[in-house]
Image (cartoon, rainbow, N blue to C red; front, side, top):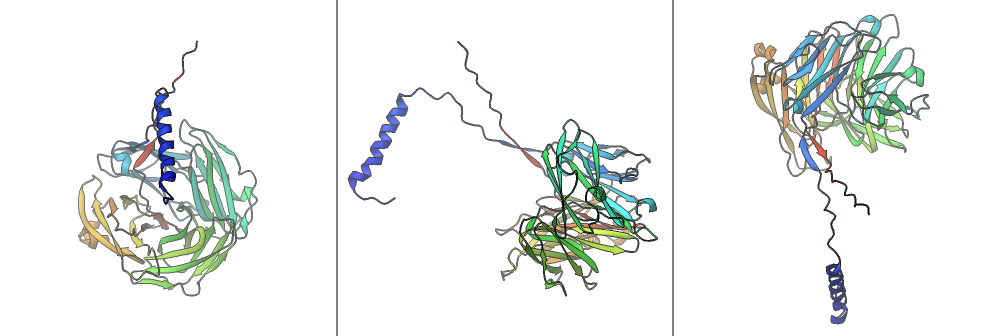
Length: 471
């Protein structure tokens, strides 16, 4: 504010003095200042893995590192354990950890599905409850049908809305609003029963009360032989830029529009040598609340990443079909901290291929940037067997040779039970890093997007309510 004269300048001073005098005459305010919320480390975590709809729980369950509690799991500090669960009709298996183990605990299930359940290799990351979930690439017909599984944690009921999107926009589903999920219970929603006849469906799960663990199993049963069963990995929250790591062609890219306006999505291929336009797939217009489809050619080599940029919030998935199995790679979240890479998940999956990609924050920026990622490998007891550093240039995608990065001979790679990726602190301009792990075995292949677990929680401060005495 500029001065217009000495007299005018004195006016606010005199007013302020009068206000101070009035304040001085008031009785002291007995109300305490509101306390600031506290940030505390997570010291307890429970993850849930589901059984296939209508079938038994996963026969192979891997969990660690750290001391965790689950059926058949017995780990030491930092250890990793794989167990074969007895056949049962339990809907889900819970994996729990407390203390330091809760900060990094990971659980993974692997199952070679029987022909009656679609066949193929189906893997899933055990997940903890959340308020919102996204899945892209399900079906709701006779050839391919998806089932949503919802589970509320023990002691807390949940109310859930399920929003379904198809190629033309939001679908008019039946019975998907205000779904009640009792504490410790699992509710199944078969897509063909609530919105039949849609080939490509995106699913948004919103918990209006409480939180839930959500999973979506997609089964291909058309033709003479089954064509695969897969757990759709949960996608990262919709954004203007989405990275889908670990892609190869030929494949189908599905883009889900989370907005109420039409958007144009432009895919770009990221490889170890940089970014390039996807041949024949320059852009796709996605209807408001709809799902768009782009065919990716066979020239897309393993270890690539697809970057999708749009003029609105979207999320995406890439689906491949190999023989009698289907695999889905989904939009991955930025690795904000250390993440566990599960390398030993039992006999159903024997080999793992790790892909790490770094986003180019500004495609028009000429300055080269990169992000360093620390890599450490551990055996089943939790002993470190190798370590190294990986540097990923922004705008590239790298197929990681774990033996080379960790300094291990090929014969020693069999000792690895899990690895830990820890992105080093970013520079002034952050370079987001994403990663995925493709597991292969006798039943086919399956892809897990890697995520950094939440390690801290914000606890609101509680101020005692002061009740004045009654006369």
